[in-house]
Image: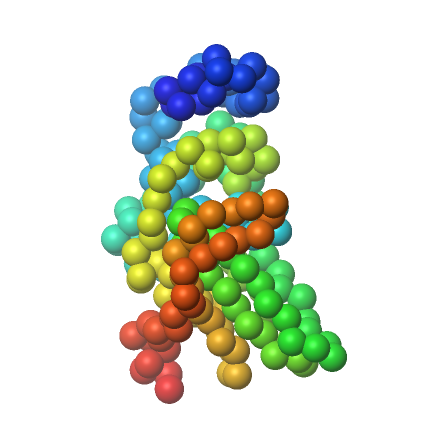
Length: 190
């Protein structure tokens, strides 16, 4: 939180008044709860979300997400109150590429032409959270990257990831792309 205040002193009006007001009123417990969820934020197309953890053992057991904390974040106005679907539109006559960022990692989904529309169950962060998410330093573990990939992977799709070096004028510059390995569940289905 010190980074927000330091940034506001250096350059006034860097953060919205709503962000500063929310920051002022957050308890330590609420801030820790937000950090737990925020560390799993996936951003694409100006939307930040986490995968809906209902029935996801990885998110419930390893990352310890629970429904009570989700309700707290909804009450604070940090998470939307509804389960939503993130939609990847159908590709028609040409290949498409979708880019997701999770902290300092980008995940690139190369979808061939004629890929049908896809729906991913997500919990969406509200717009006010945008300032906060930029301040959380995270490098996701491979199992979380694999979980995202498993939600969007279809036959003939290529899903790769890389470390983000910098983002300049909306363009992500990254290291070499590496294939995202299949999860254990995906391997069993093959």
